[in-house]
Image 1 (cartoon, rainbow, N blue to C red):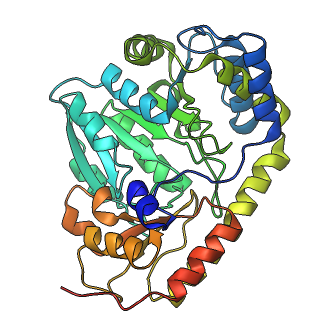
Image 2 (image 1 turned 90 degrees about the horizontal axis):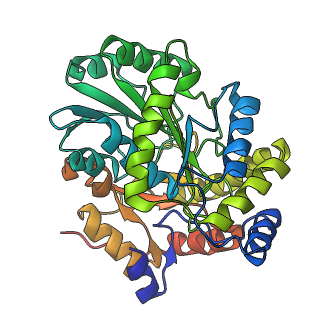
Length: 370
């Protein structure tokens, strides 16, 4: 969709990357590291300065005590972190539970392990059906993948929902593998790492990273917090996959984490809330139906009042004729028909660009039908 947007001059609200600059302190520190000739491999599991900074942040934000020498691994983005974790911990024939709609990589990551992904619905605005989750858990369940705040759903899982998942992980001796990359982009609810719940520290792998918090999706710096024995296995897989994340960029991120205080993270959420509300209003005026997300920077919208085209065709029409690119909802479901009338908008863009997108949405031509 990004390529199609470029080809037709559409505003790219498809791929989830910001179009605004990263904090100056981050760029300056990374540039300083480059000019200081930090050009060679960092320690495979992450530069010590960065690991120490991340460990302090977990302690200050969540009261999590993390040993940066044995429990923390820096990867080439959270996407690599998820693949590395599942490859390290999941064996062939086991099952990995994935909530849907999902970030596209989770199912394939399970398949790469020769495991079976098992899908459980968790739609925007809906509560987690713990009875349904309980019904699919078994002695084959090796991991439950948790994405909160969620992409593309925008869901922030509540304490009660997380407690229900935790109880099932403990009952079935399964790992909770959490993708918390949007932890600081929230509009409702509290971000609760499931690792902080009773009995969960020893069976949780907490994945996050810098891409969304600092608007540096191209830097590819992810993080994994896991018990020491699991970290040992994870580090071996990580080493064979990518060796390590970019050394000077790790140094720049360490400075930013130690320099930017709570005001930065609060401002991040407030700025994204303005963008969310701007796009939500425009979508409703254009006859899309959507639930305002609790967190992250996506809106999964139902377009059935505008068109009966299948989602891929509608997304192409919206890009080419409407000038706004999105991702078809079929990308986020195990059964494409479940996303057939949905499309995902990303609002991680400047307000000026979003306002132009709003203008185009207001001026949409009549959508073709089958």
